[in-house]
Length: 518
Image (cartoon, rainbow, N blue to C red):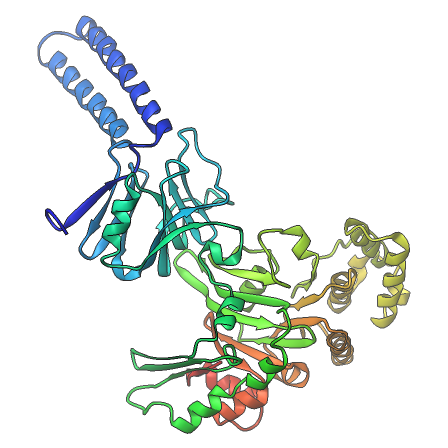
């Protein structure tokens, strides 16, 4: 690096709106300074009071002038080991160069709403827009999420969040990229086309098409992680075995068993579009990570069990994949469509049964079904047919004209299930399947879910009751302390962990911190 080991790159000098604002206000400040000075000279007694008043006046207006001129003196600074990003006095961020995966010229297809100066400082999902204009844009891709102080696009009160890419202006983009090329990869100019590859996250389908064999071993804090991503096994062959306090690493036999997990399943589903897919799904509450880096896929004709103890992160995950809670980081795809982009149209594919029934208790069951059906735009005759069908299946025919407020909790959950299935959705999400259901009702509900699977639907269900999951789930994922610890069929996971007795001892072993297999 030249000079004192740093390079300075201005970022607002070419911003016309900022320059007009600054040079328009500076004369006003000067005129106001003179007027206020004359008033002080006339009305303030001579001597030290007048001197003090002029000193305070000078300091105040000098500070204002520095703030205004600082808008056009804003610059990013590249040091030998870090990149210091800055936009006037509004945003400052220090990035270690080890956190930067790549830098490239970029032309977004859309922008957030700018402020009156034409500037944009906002987080939109995983992207931070730190722009003073819509040209000379550099996209900085990060190797891991970074916490930044900037308001979220959907909620301005949310002042902090994680981002995986940062968009900034540089007045001399070519010189900036030339300097960055010495320390990080630099790509050519990209134009956003709205695809999943263009917004900073490589789609899983692209990874699978590449089918690049990869073996990585990562040793940190007493843990061994072995990843073997080969064609046809990119989902089912991940081993992450934690080695505790001097214990030996996972044996070759255990590794081979772990690599076989899910391989057959994914070979049979290789030509299917995932009904539900999420990658690097993360949610922070303040500084607490309720869910961290969840990545998995489910397919049509599958019952997937999402298992975990109370407080493990199941409900937070389900809120994110149903659109009730925006993730801090990560994407949710339903039948190949981004849940947060088309929004309503995608959510029509989802039927959600919450753990606590959300129903209008001053309606009867038939009235509630009719109201919900009309909101979905279904024909009245179709709604009546579906209503009578579900009331019969769920044993509520005689209760159909009674106020829901008179129902038991189990009956309310039955109505919640009927409402979720009213539109015949492709993806059914059930939070805490066993809540409020007695044994006969639970057996009935399980039969309904199995029938949905046989019809090619996807059922994503959370529960902490291992027996239920073991009986009806094709695959299970076990979440513990916000992280996915195991993913596969019950038999495969039991073999990989060398556990007898089914899902319950397997879950207890994972919850006790004996490792993780995916």
